[in-house]
Image (cartoon, rainbow, N blue to C red; front, side, top):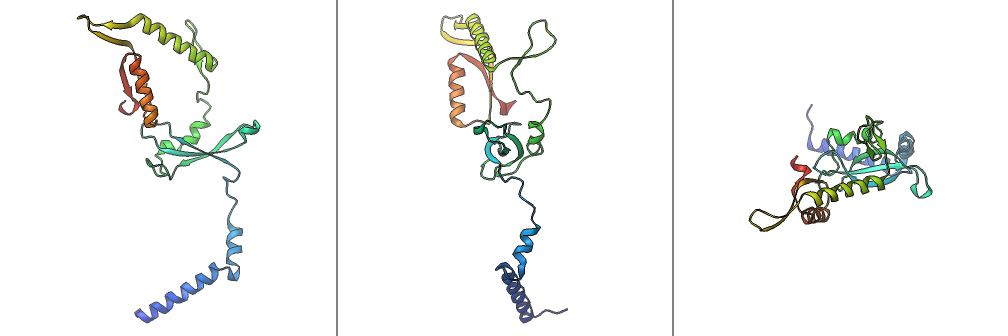
Length: 197
């Protein structure tokens, strides 16, 4: 079949005119189209931006939850997707990031601080205050016991070699700077980042 330029332009113009008439609401096209769309599942949800927890890439995610925390209701996350405004991933997620919703709702996910006391074969739930106080106390005791103020030549070194710190790589520059200052001011030399592990 041979198609001349005149016949092509006539056919394209007729198609354009037909879609324009339909788009302007003539012929009931809009009503039929609106009736065919099912209700959007994210209506009435709260949107929260966050960072994916799986690796050191720090992809941006958007979590959608139902329930009003301000009214004391439980907020259940019903959908997680990539954040298109995030400069790292621009809305895309790897397979692990795409499965974050399964991790959130997993029965085996740790939700509270747990401690296994000496001689025990099971973990017990403790409060956040207890857990943080216990960590601070153990770190302070270890630093007091193992802090090195001077080396063999008598030069001040102020080192704490028995404890190290693994920082998160999915943080802001300001948080990373503050973490670095705290760790180094405590005297820790063993300091690394999650991205290198």
